[in-house]
Image (tube, rainbow, N blue to C red):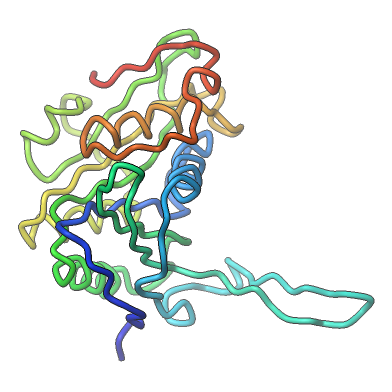
Length: 236
């Protein structure tokens, strides 16, 4: 059975696919806030929805029941959605949002890859944030993972070899590498002592990275206000 239902095919010209799924890992809610800002700044419509009964464990990600005066009026189920649209400057976008799947990662990444190829996606950008030994008094910085050395060098990376638990974003990145679609993961470095609380600087530098790498603009986000005037930096 197909893992998704296609709702429409808006006219998109080599869109950038931005991946911002809830799950491992998002220190300081950097990626979640950046994606919420992006969704608020661009006009999008649902392009495809995924079968959450197959992909999610509803005991881990329970639906929300609405109760009014003791009456069960309905449930709000979690959704994994691919949305299509464009930013204020006319850049075509696809946004993959929703909770990280609990099951069938290989099938899910194959389905996302199939959709991306059908829309002619030219670049994939994932958003995330991780706890790092950095102080809040220094400029927020990005590190990246990527499908090529050229992409990694454009953003900056942590040198050396590193084995860490993977999120579905990493699985998608490898899948796109096999499909020949360039993909880069932007990772905000969050002070480890601030990782459990909202850290707007992480969201700001992720949005700055979207602009730097793909030209995507989000005019509704006041970067200087969110960081208290702390400058941004991209690179190691």
